[in-house]
Length: 390
Ligand SMILES: *Cc1c(COP(=O)(O)O)cnc(C)c1O
Image (cartoon, rainbow, N blue to C red):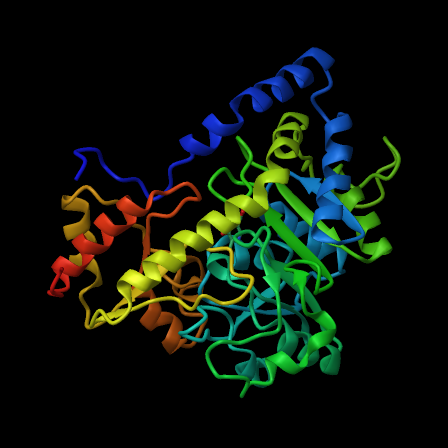
């Protein structure tokens, strides 16, 4: 096909479609001269809270800061244990460690790539304070079961939504035909991820589904008290200027980024629909290829990544072949968090997470991706897998 290298993510078509509006928004902020906590921050917070269906939205500097501030706003700190997934970007466990708490890893399910709710209970101790699920690749975690366990044991729930902006939890589970009883928990169904637990933490890193043109993040909560503390923590622990009450951070969402996000927010559902269209086509074209496991098309999944598994130890060779053919792919994540040098020797194995680290391969995906390009990638993949191509 084309001589050009195919990236894993192409943000240019999106920018071209909204270029004039973005430039107007940037010019408006520059003309106003208000770069810190200008009016666009407040307006974006109101608009995003309405979109997500949550009472409070607090703009911060990054998704990592959103996790840290969210945890601290819930009173989680020194010596507390927080149950989370080993299979995520390090910001998840790093945030737990950075507030002085201890990440306790519960292995994932291979089908969803998310924390296995059935394995959570055995890791609860008297020191456990919270569960921190990640909606990995944009696939909602099993919030029904997680919220039940949290209620039973008096735990807080912090949702890492860095990869799941716009995703909705429907309480359906496609793996087991309802055997897990996820679907009986209708009270929380049809809600955006991040609005089910006590706190949701979002990232606006440029490559995320709703991306700024720089760093940015968001804390969301329905709890007035938690929102008040989060607002205070993002500006040096002060409710009133020069009356700092606790040790906080300098972690505001830039006015420029807020103005950009206000332009992008009304498009997010269409962009996520585009990602689902791409994932669905990939799944159709890759069904029944020996040695490849395709991801579940779960309801509400927004496909921040389209991630397949390549079995029989062939993943690295396949990735190299695709690269030689000009097709970029990524491995999220080659090393599970519990295996990182920073935690060396501290954790026991999580076999599913370890297995996935050796099998996962994320293929190119963006909303505007053309069907022809998807077919080309699939055919190249089938070729290396020894699958006949018609
Ligand atoms: C991107 C990401 C983060 C961190 O977000 P930043 O805005 O880069 O700080 C946290 N958790 C997960 C799962 C992520 O993908």
